[in-house]
Length: 504
Image (cartoon, rainbow, N blue to C red; front, top):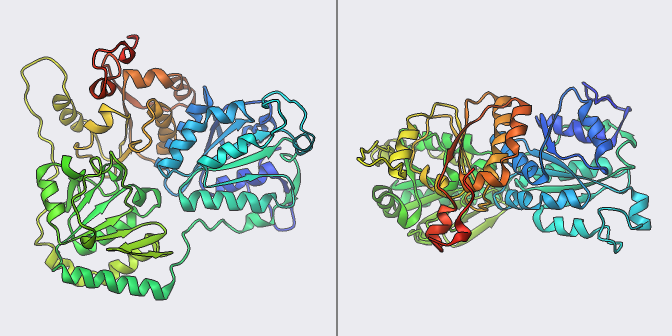
């Protein structure tokens, strides 16, 4: 059951398990997360015998999902993968998968399930609900996956696997694969493996795209080049950071980011002005963004915490939005015109504006270190000092709550990667995510991985420290002891016992 070191040649065969794993290897996956269970053990044999993949067994399925999420965020252009077992295992991972769906992270969830014969005869097996509904968990998974597949026939398995993985990467959303025990070892043709999966977004319609380009250029001209760029989460998720930076470099338009877009643009770039969060932005940032005659939003994701509780003060008449699968110009939407294909062409059209844009001043994105007399470690004291600790190429992971809010205004060195879960906000997520992020960072040669997590959050998922030890990753962990659920205390119940936790 050794996974071949080379792609099988045309006319050869391989098992379904071999086929699936080779597709993952082709997309630069090196680590698979999960928990063993009786319905996935046969598949895990193939992972264990692989010379190209490692098994990072987790302490529980929720942490495995968190780790796959963190891995995918850092290893852009690839995907995270976890393996669980039917029912009891897969449902434990649901919160982590839902978070990946919410935050647009490509994760493949492989579930080992009973044989195709058992699914048809419906015996009262362990891990079932006892009522014969073998599709119940699939129906649940459909709520948190962009696409699902239940393999039932070896002849269609390769195409289904290819479809699922492609959708996962292209849409930057989780997908769900049911892998029956009897199909794992089935022999199939390996011919399709000779053709790499096309995980690039589809081409834009040329006629519509040219019209959109003309409209954008016209609005920029009408704005007298008074244009700002606002870069957000989906610029990262859909792998357009390079295109965004080239556009910014060509135009010299001032660049800002939303909280979920932090590090989409290098924060030491001289035309980068900081984080825009609606009414709670720094005054100088708020003034520059909201007074611009035209805002070009790239990869926007307008959630509450990402927009200062929906307090953007930019009229639609002054807004252009570029998204992965559509473009919006003022009130008009052009579906099928995605930013990955559009941005390079727009960049080419922008050369004449470079000199004019240089006149637009950009606030210096700095965070001075204040002096405080008291001995209490406050946010005002901590975050500017932490900023001096960071180095180029660091991966900084910030837990939901005080960490994710406090670090936003800290300028990060060039090449840094910021990882946080601002939309989904599941406390404890960062511990598992740090494991995945650290493995991915090791793969691609990034620098240190640094986690900021509170005492309440780490108690939910602390077991994954043991997996970090086993996999040999060594993140730096700042444990902020707030003596309980601090954000919740500020929201409600400042002195309530339900916001207390045991001090470990």
